[in-house]
Image (cartoon, rainbow, N blue to C red):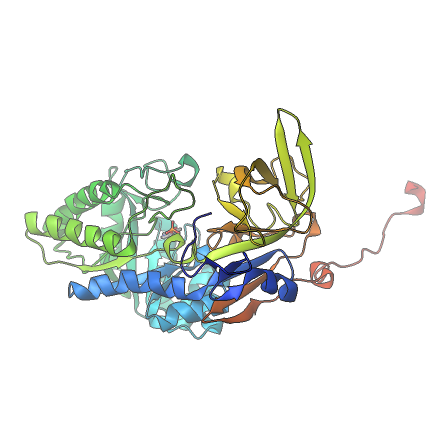
Length: 442
Ligand SMILES: *Cc1c(COP(=O)(O)O)cnc(C)c1O
């Protein structure tokens, strides 16, 4: 297993994160356990922010909170001076509870409800990224009703595919997200937005996919977007003061993944923006980006306890752990690949090819199909790295498993930032049913 951030191996042969022995964390907080390396989150955040600063660029780096949205995470993100993307009333509520500065909150989503838009207006957030005509009309009506100005971006679909897993593409033309550039939908949206008295159109947003390694996809998407910016300048005298390149920067889950560092991603985006503004004779807009996975992903490690094993000769060796798709659905959903290690036996030779299964009643409940480990036995601690993004945030109570606790570690200290759920929590919203069957139906 690749050791990200502060992860290391101590003299006892145990995995440590943030200077904390993971086997001690397990003793104290139980399993499964999400452990976050806070200094790695900070390092990534600074990589993005400092690179814009180094180039003297006006920019906003907005953490896409859907990757991992808890009060503690948003506090760290705030401390590092980032902005924040939310995609629902629940994420916005979490941000408000974390005292996140509202002017740095941006609201995304392809089907924001009237209540969610009202909540965003009441909180007076920094920007709403308008996705479609229904939302544009609704927001126009609400801002007129409240006589409240709201900065907006228009999300456009440039029709460019990012080179990544098919299921997580959003930039192609056939997408539920955004105004279409090709068909003229985006142009009509710009026209209507400019006419709306209380909407301040700052510019456009695009997001072309996730876990992107090939940075040329940003160049291709920007090329299409700039063609439209030129058209809108000529047609409406509209100047985009903000250009939001979205997120999607890839991370290293396994050694098949070769990601660019945050600094290199930012350098690339700056050069793309400079290139197109130069050839079209435009002023450089403020650049916004929205990393989610690249901030939270490799900072997270999940610790499990090994239980049963099932070795089928010449077929497969199953090793089951005390979590599964309920705390990490990405393998089942996206065929995601992970690396793992036995956190209590880091120095032992890896001799056995195994498949790590969850405990959910579902054949597809697998965490890793192939990983080589020292022959695992019951009570070993299995660590899966790079589980910081889209694991806790997609966790469920399937099979009525309580969701695990989340622990932040930094400088030899550990703090629980999300409590482990209890069985009482699981039935908290259940109500007994008073049967209304009639006697004659028995
Ligand atoms: C999901 C999402 C992001 C973040 O994507 P990552 O792959 O986690 O970086 C950014 N912007 C938008 C609009 C998104 O939907």
